[in-house]
View 1: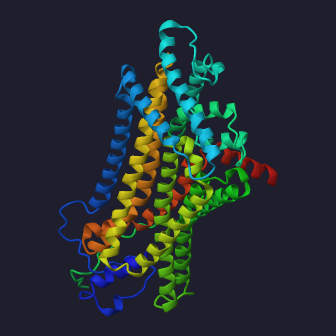
View 2: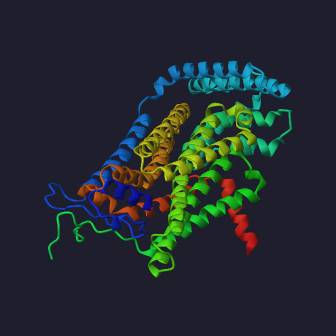
View 3: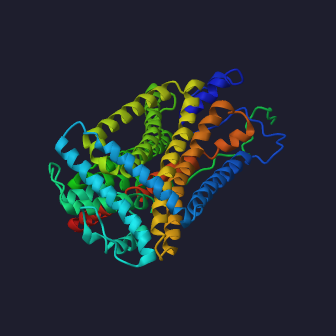
Length: 206
Length: 293
């Protein structure tokens, strides 16, 4: 930027004659720079900057992978209760009617409550399934047919984790089954949204 | 001939010159790629969503950056060929306008990245309310505010670029925004990790580790690319303001054209890591190219 040349010229006006104060597109004829008596290598700022940047990026990468590795599966129960608390707070948030389309929001609230109960039950049942190898029974009023498929769904999740996808399916999956003005939440979108809650974070970062 | 102590020893730290062909190729590729994204989003009605509007905003700022560099090079060539004078008033004004376009591009990039990160954050943590929180109108309003702010700041910075008071906020804004974006993504990443752990309770737990490694790699790429492409230039501005006559600083500033090329490379890489990840956008491109045959 030749504006920067302006900066350097103004600061050095005492040292230079006025003829050097020009707009010049051939950059950076820095007049009064003496290269005598340099203690370190002359490109030391360049080298230091790039090395520092590389170190920082690698450090960030290792911190992120360490975040991956800390926490073993036996911490699942603690995380599960924390997750349940969070889901309940989501539900509490959601209980408030939104500013417009109250019918829509109330339907969404009911569906989300059942959805979250379903999620919680599902994870509970996943744990039980490990021990008993039996199909779980649900007291929730949604998607009994989803439960036997739940392990299949998680395997599909796991396959999906290897894909690189931008999380668009909040919109696209709803767009494919609902219109903008469609206030009816039919059952298929619930399964979509169930997948959505579990998969969104993976898809963004994968 | 006696050379005074204050004369530039030309053999030390000469300007590192990027060949013009490389320069123009990189710039043209950046402009074309981002233009394609804009066209694709405009033509496909399915892509009229807040998320894609933010990606378009990023594409516009990348295009502006590449356009600035291209125009600047054209002006240098015109000056060398003698069509433009070096001391004219018109050239000064043109130069001011181009500088403000460049700063607009930088600020636009930063704020677009912030908007994309915030949009993804809302998608994850407020998934079911997303449609109500991030309506199309709100996204357009947010973008209008961002661009108005960036335009105002860029004009102010270009006009008052000799004040330290503009250089310091400019250079402080950059790491602040990066840190904020990093925090948003790390929080999302932690949620992904807790989900993956639940999935890992299944026998197929080896995939879980690989998937989270990919998450770490993706996040590092996002932020690493932006840092590596823009930080050299921001450091250049700092050094030009505060130590233009220090020989070490002068040597750093001699690689200015390389820094400029890096910024244009960022314009090429950004679409790949943001826009082209979306299957919908890729399908739109395929349709565009197959229809044109």
